[in-house]
Amino acid sequence: MKVKKRAPIIYNLFPLLAGTFSNWEGHCKRASEMGFNWVFVNTIQRPGKSRSLYSIADYHDFNPLFIDQKSSKSPREQAKEAIRAAEEKGLQCMADLMINHCSVDSDLLETHPEWFSWDKNGHIVHPWANENGKKVVWKDLARFDHKGTADKEGLFAFCLEVVTFLINLGFKGLRCDAAYQVPKSLWKRLISEVKKEHDDISFFAETLGCQPEQTRSTASAGFDYIFNSAKWWNFKAHWLLKQYALTREICPSIAFPESHDTERLCEEFDGNVQGLKQRYLFTALFSSGVMMPVGFEFGFRKKLHVVKTRPEDWESTDIDIMPFITKVNALKASHAVFQEEAPIEIEHSDSPHILVMWKGSTSTQEESLLILNKSIRDKQHFSAESFKDFVQAGAPLEDLSPEFPLSYIPTPFSYHLLPGQGKVFVANRDTVEDD
Image (tube, rainbow, N blue to C red; front, side):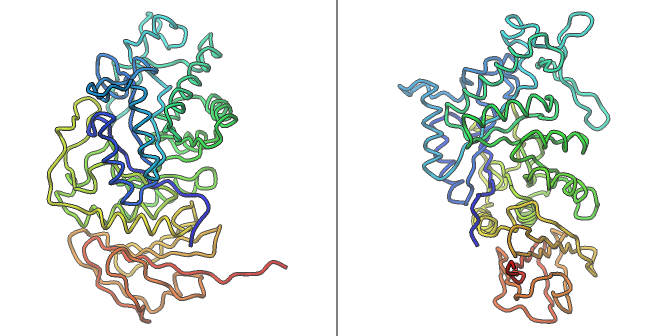
């Protein structure tokens, strides 16, 4: 079944690993072949002395590492050409939007000191976070003072300028870094102003690490999508579904098996390919959108680094799960139930090692059932007297699993799941005609 609006199936092209703008096309070709429809590129603007991607010194210039010095074209045209090439392959491009802080050595601190937070001793305030009970301060960053600045209009105009710069390059989406650290009122105004002129631009809020109410508040500012925490779920605890329930009617969300901020999953799983497949299948089907970083398809194990990563860090592996990812993406793209924040319930299973997850579309008659082996090392047996105990659909279930689909589903049902294997079933409820 086709749906009108494509849910975001995002390939994260980490630019420090990809290299210059001229190298993007090959990566985008691979992403397109796997069925991705978005490519997210981390910050491409010129960084400060720390050289971190997330420490921008000049918002209207480019990181020299991404400029092809052999090209006769300007850096701006190189970037636009790379984005056009991605679009020709069916990929919309998403950029990082960072307006909660900038580089501590940016000229903005001298030209507009009133835009920033300063302590009582006249020192710039650095953003910080609590990581495992320890306060981590990013001393290469300076925090914008959106609430207290004496020049709110000037700072807002600057933010709008930055967005316009990225849109003019060809970006159709903006991943808003640490969105919850920026006032909701600013986001509402910024998103509204941008969409008046560019109604095809999508805003994605990065809200990881904040409290649930902060997420709800930020999501309601007009964002098209937020990111969820499915990556950290152990398939048992109740917190993920509670978070999902709190936000699903406000704003659809995006799950991911790993990100540029986390350890590589292949490293966590010590090379276990079944674990990679299990996690991608779950995150792709759980919520409206999914995002996967470059290299996941090949089982890369070296963590992406916002300063040190280089194209030379490209790994040579004996892993290639591109065919599996392609099938999962095709499954997601062709069924509405996997593209919306539909109601989800965890059904009872006789085995604690098996996840049975029901999801029912509210925009169509589709229902799905995911039966997932939580263990990535051991086989598990699943049995059920009848799938009618799990679904409301009157039509027969169809096995659409990316691997080993069954042409016939017996009743009672009995199946030995391979390590990490997931069985995916979809059926349709009876259509009721309006009076």
